[in-house]
Structure formats: C-alpha cells, structure tokens
Length: 136
Image: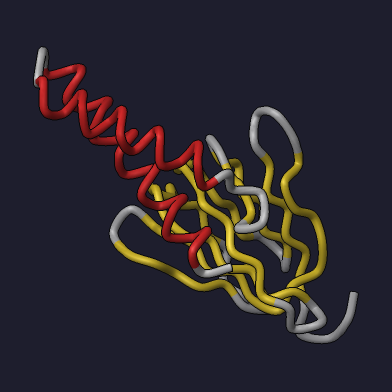
C-alpha cells in the first residue's frame, strides 16, 4: 500500500461498488459530514442519505449517491456497508427525475403517516441522486 493511502470498500447488498486505495473518503454522517484520512482513529458510524466523495491514490475524485448505511474505520481500512450507492457516472437522471415526481405526488396526497415518511425518504434520495449526477 502506498504511503498515506488506505483501503476503501463500498459494499451494497447487491454488489461491491468500489474497492481500492484512496487518499480520502468523505461521507454524510447522520449529524454532519465527516472525512477519513490515513491513520484515522477507529470509528463505527451510521451514515445518512447524501454524497460520498472518494479521492483515489491517483487524485481522481469520484462521487457516489448513498441511501444510508454504516461505516467502519479500523487500521487504515474503511468498509462502508450501504443500503444503496451509485457513482455519479452510473446515475440514471431520467429515472431519478421520475422517482422525484412520484415522491412529490405521494407527499401531495398525504394518505397516511407511513406513506408520508416513505415519500419524504424517496424524495430525499432522488434529489440527492440528481445533485450528484449534476456534479459529473
């Protein structure tokens, strides 16, 4: 492993989204963003809906939209277990727009508290995906 780099693995239930050496990793903690660098103290944290920013060993920045999950930092290795994660290049903007529209319609109808909560989360996820895709 190169100096000042550490191993990062981003894993969803469906697949390994990213695996490699990185210089930095920034994630949306539930109370604010946090960044991990080489020799970071051990950490276990929940993450929320938001942007993951990865700077790889070559200095290339890749952004991911995530739907939440958990991250563990231990011994210069970071493992992110995400509910969902898509790189900026993988995001289907049309699909994200349709999801945003559906969630907005469900919020407007307000049939039950459960529907409202699910619609809010769906709206947050779709808006996050659109934001990440626009940075590409």
